[in-house]
Length: 183
Image (cartoon, rainbow, N blue to C red; front, side, top):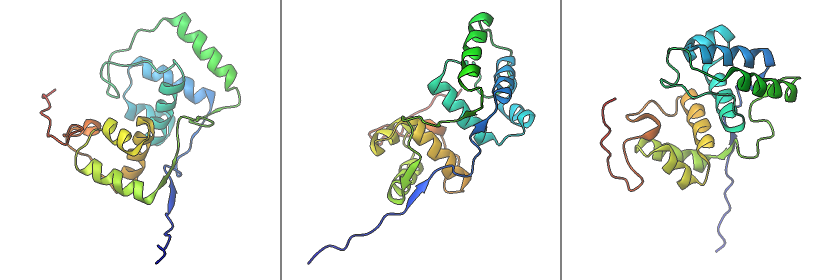
């Protein structure tokens, strides 16, 4: 007896976001980021959805040297020190390359936004069982940026919630419960 072929439903994650950014918006974002503004207040200043800003930040982090690391991440903090001449040169090169605007992850071969429903289901199971993002990426044969984008998508759609341990979860790759130190 021949097995009946079943079709898989294909989805594009985060298709409702605006990925287009003007150079003026990127410069304002970077200025506020360096000055220590919180991500929430930067989003308000830019009149942008927090997930749109998060996606743009992921792209800048992966594909440029413009996004500087901050000790307290997205929270309010003291301004960070940057070598002004080096940063201005990098920003000038970025602005020249994207003079007509910047679209996050456009043409980035490292990121695949297409998922099928079986992958969604498997991801949600691993996420709810507390596995870390790196383990989920290896298991699904995806990179961590793709998993991070999927987390944003699934959270936006109410399919997953916040969890103990955040991106790191509470299990290691062998399924054992990890003890996180209080921070």
